[in-house]
Length: 391
Image 1 (cartoon, rainbow, N blue to C red):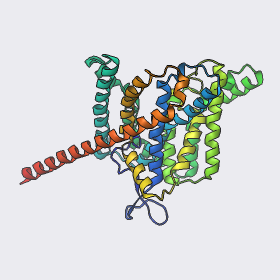
Image 2 (image 1 turned 90 degrees about the vertical axis):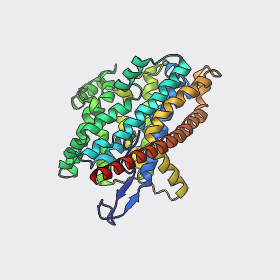
Image 3 (image 1 turned 135 degrees about the vertical axis):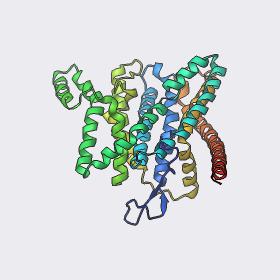
Image 4 (image 1 turned 60 degrees about the vertical axis):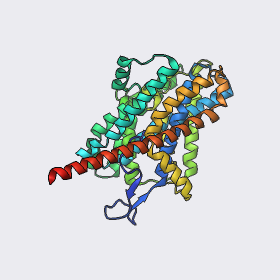
């Protein structure tokens, strides 16, 4: 997932003048904090997939180990909202033109090529999971990499969303839009818990609160994150890092506490904080994700080595997302031959996730090098042909 999103937008290079505003007449300065956000989101993707593969969701939540794993699960779930905000940050000034849609070609190429590799790897390890019909169906409905389908859809309307955003006349109107979207897309998962309470007073409060949190528009939650990214780019807000850190901790522990309470010693309940896309549209997840973004995006990374590593990871975040699914198959096929209980996998998180992430980064870097080499060759041949035709 590149920016998750921005396969071809010069990464984090933004024109900045001495006043801190964008300008076409000034030199480009890289913002390393944005590389840090994107690298964190990529690592969170690999991390949250670990929970699906290790058997967490079929294990009773009844001890300290599973509670802390639940805390971690809610933290890592912020990967998708982070990517959506990055998309808004980088795409908020894109206009309706040919170049905008051509920028989707590298994304589609990565999706098709790496997903094809995944199909062959899956068939090798699991038997014939994908025939030609199953493969075409998985490509067509994006079940093999759902976020790519979402991204293509978002990019189709991004120029029109940008016109809406830039038509807002001041910060007040921006705030009204963001608050309105938050109410209609993210409040319902929490409010519904109150309205379903067995305590009358809590149930009454929840029922009244539902007036401001209808459930009909929950699927619009990506627009909230997209416009949050637009807002952050335009206004460059800065907050106390300690306060942001405490907000992050509070949100993930609240989510874990709710999950534990309603599991009541049983398995994790997927819809407990939102039945839409695993809970990305829950207000506590939205607050946590925004706090993480604000905590990281304005970091000034002094180390050239650290900055270079983050830049390289950031540049291939889409490919990391796709390759990590392949390494999940390989790693867990071998790991499950040695370990059978989920609790055995708890400590393996700190081994298997880094292995997957590093392998995904290396393969993604190699893929991008090969893709760029082929793309430059095709471009040069096309340019040469055009020159011959014009003579």
